[in-house]
Structures are given as C-alpha cells and as structure tokens.
Image (tube, rainbow, N blue to C red; front, side, top):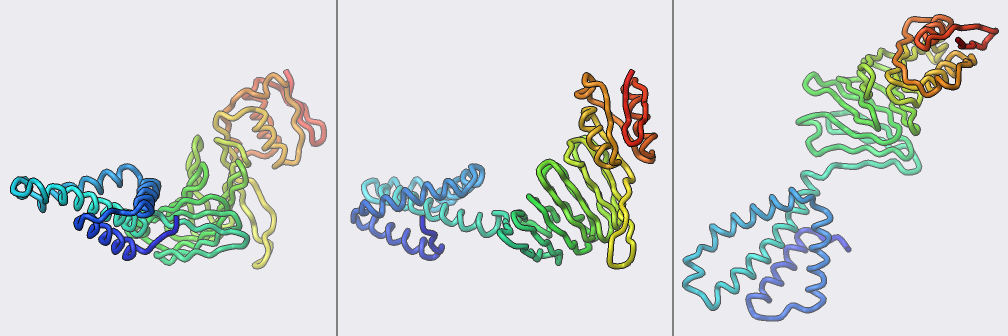
Length: 315
C-alpha cells in the first residue's frame, strides 16, 4: 500500500477517534484502510518488537484510566475507554513502525548495474560492484563496526583503535583495524585481496589467516580450505609473479585436493578411483610441487611415479 508520512497517519487516526467518541460510523473504506494498515504493520515489525510496543502501551493506559473512573461512568466512559485505548494502541503501533524504520532497521545498499560508493559514518568507504549488497546496522559505528556483504566490494577502512572493522561475507569473515582490501565472492569461490595494512580472515574449519599487503587469501572454491598467495610487484605500477605461500585442507576429499593442486601447479595427478572421496587433512605450506605430491601420496599410503608433468599415485 502507499506509504504515508507519520504526521499524516497521526492526523487521520485522531479524526477516526473523534468520529468514534461522537457516535458517527466509520465508513467501509476507512475500515478497509485500517485493516490494510494492520497487515502492513505486522509485516514490517518482528514479533518481539510488536509485543514490546503493546506492553508499553497497556502499561501507559493503566495509569491514565483507573478502575475508579470507569466505575463512576458505567454507561458512557467505559465505552469510550475501550475505543480510545484501541485508537491509541493503533497510533502507538504506527509510531513503532516509524521508530523501527528510523532507529532500528538496518541500512541496505545495493549496487545495480554500476559500481556504487558507500560512505560510512566512521569515514570508511565501500565500493560495491554490480550485484553486491551491503547491510549496516543502526548501531554502526558507536557500538561496533560490523557490516554484512553479499557479492564483491573494495573496503577502504578508517583507522580505529576502539573498534575493529568486521565484514561478514558468505561463509567467512574479515577483521581489520584500518586498511584497504577487496572481497570477491563467486559461487563457492571466496577471496580477500589486501592492498594496505593487515587483515585477519576467518573461515569455518580452517585456522585464522593473517594477510600482509600484496597477499591474497582464497579457498579455491572448496570448503574448509585456505591458501595464501603472494604477489610480487614487478615495478610500482604493475603486479609481477604470484607464489603460493600456504595451502591447507581440513577434512577435504582427495578429488578436491588433487583438483586444487593440478590448477595451481599446472600438473596432472592420476590416483586410484577408490580414493577419490576419501577425506584427508593436510598442510602443504613450505613445500615445492614434488614435496607436496609426495606428502599426498604418503597420507594415502601410495607411491609416486613422475612422468614429465604427470604424477601417478599407485600402490
């Protein structure tokens, strides 16, 4: 239904109140409008907020309309008491919608077809890529600096010794005090690129990863997987070669581990089909290609035979 300003709603409700106490009938159209308002209010407010608002209204009414006053006016005031209470309850509920939208409802920013810059109250700037959605609680940044992100975005975070800046993405989170970084989310593939400062990346099932500038955290699209890639600058304007600094898997299938190794090392791995779905936990940090394939074979109880860029694991 069409949204009205709170003052207009207030005036309309009081007009209905006047008609009630004067004995005039409320039209069918006005009754229908009140019913639509009730449905709209219930959709916009969560149950806890509605119950809290009703309790406050009823407590307030008790102090204004005592049992003594009703006793001395059995025929007239009792009728008006319930009518007035109902109207005030409606008015306060409408006011609760206004209060919720103004003071409690999170701010949501969505980038449609182009990038959108969002300037936060703490001085941080978020650049949302097309399709990205950023949700910010009303308490930001007084109580905490926590935001929720769907899609891809670049964060330029203002420094704060009091509150760390935390981005909850889809399945992982990034925590910083002040830095510039980019979050990328494509299906199951998650990544954090750090340009300035330091960040801590948390993801279910793997240890917290701390990044330095020109480093990237990624899960390669595999759950319970974490890797850090370092990008060395060839000069001030371009990024040079990339090297894999760490790579770990926690309870991940052999097939998924082999796929990641093959893509990153540009090799081929042949292994027994019956081991494909076996879950393993392994950390390849610090090893070269040959050493890491040897480690994989050792975990599976297999031997390695190398033919150029192909590693054959067999019994």
